[in-house]
Image: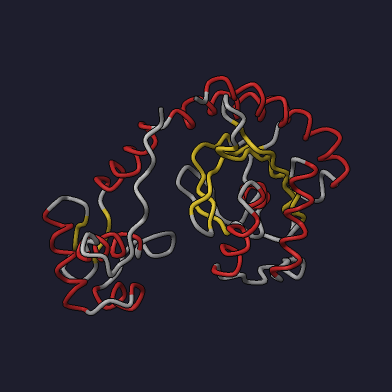
Length: 261
């Protein structure tokens, strides 16, 4: 019998540890293009008082998660232990990595697996054969859910009200001329994704990038992740994705289900 998960608490709840929340916000301030930050940079990014940021940084430095050159702060490899704790405690990355490698070998295209985290997708496994985006993608990379094929599959797996709430809450930028940002239009697309059991995103995330994703279900039939292949739009048409890539993806997703309890 499964034990119900505790209900999420709100910041005003006495059980909410504000100092911990602020420390995690400081860690999240770092990222691609933000490898070295000053105290002022972090205060501006997190919208926290400088004194609060300073205490968090000194604590994180004492714990070995942050280093400093006297002016700038940067994360240390110790932070990887936080992400590794998740990757090592869930069977998904271990179970699906060989499948992604097989998919990439069969299609000669890069394949990925991601989960939903709020309004973003997080890559938990990837097999890359070529670089098809202007930014490099790897385990832990994040992309907006509303305009990625992985994200649309995962949003479509949610109850309609929950998907709408997430779409309305997230920042929906028009990343290319093709990007769909209207909530109602996106909700209609999610209905179609549920019918088709796959999603295609055609140059909405980045010009020249076309991708197709399918849901990954566990042994009980519940959608726990999504798997995709991204291609250069000039090489494979939308019809080509459906005809040649979709069957490989679907077979791969089905093959990994028994390993996901």
